[in-house]
Amino acid sequence: MGKVIAIANQKGGVGKTTSAVNLAASLAAAKRSVLLIDLDPQGSATVGVGVSRQSIVHSINSILLGECEIADAIVPTQSGLDLLPANGDLTVAEVRLLQVEERERCLAKAITSIKNNYHFILIDCPPSLSMLTVNALVSADSVIIPVQCEYYALEGLTSLLSSIDHIRKTANPRLQLEGLLRTMYDGRNRLSVEVSEQLFAHFGNKVYESVIPRTVRLAEAPSHGLPILYYDKHSQGAEAYLAWAGEIIRHHPLDKKTNGQAKRKKGVETVR
Image 1 (cartoon, helix red, strand yellow):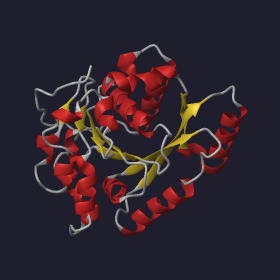
Image 2 (image 1 turned 180 degrees about the horizontal axis):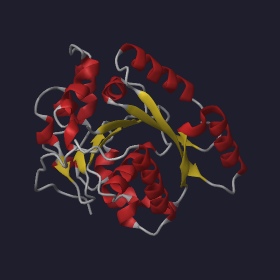
Image 3 (image 1 turned 90 degrees about the vertical axis):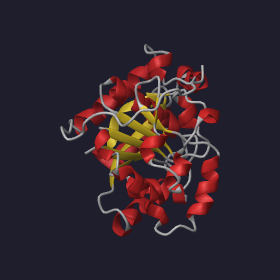
């Protein structure tokens, strides 16, 4: 059965979507079947893997509201991974979800039918503790938290960890902290080093050994609709995300019951 991992941090600008997109692409490059779910109304992960928001026929919005089957909304990408896309309609879905019975389980119910088709299902959460994020946490087996190695790195982390613990006790007992990823790291900067040391002191082996550097190439890649691995495979950013994917693969050996890709749809318009 596939591993469902939510990538979340209620603080924006910490490299959450960048990490979701590039982890998905790196895992796919390592011959793992991957579904990336864009659960952010901004649709940044959708654009980041080369899918035009204007070309979307069915989005995660349709899935949450029960308007179509999840397999019909999944689209292939040029990076070898599958995508469940998002656009601005997701804001409407979040409001309408408030009137739905068991609204926190809408995504979990939808994922059930395709979970065995993938080795990894990654959920890019919005930068808030909203009903969309709650849906992701109820659906997930574990949570990855990207943490920016700067002054306010730990701000909001306590609140997020408290929310994860609450979801575990009330709605999803299997939910675990997968790990913390240090992003925008600069080893020449004393503050980055100090924040890194604080994270290891508080969370020990839950902090990944891999770190994501602050680089211009990582910032450029989304505007080209490409993960860093396909934008500049020799860059520091590409090497860092491949190393991180390797850590995750070692933690999660292949499950023989997981048998390949979900149904793919053709004719997806891409951004160049």
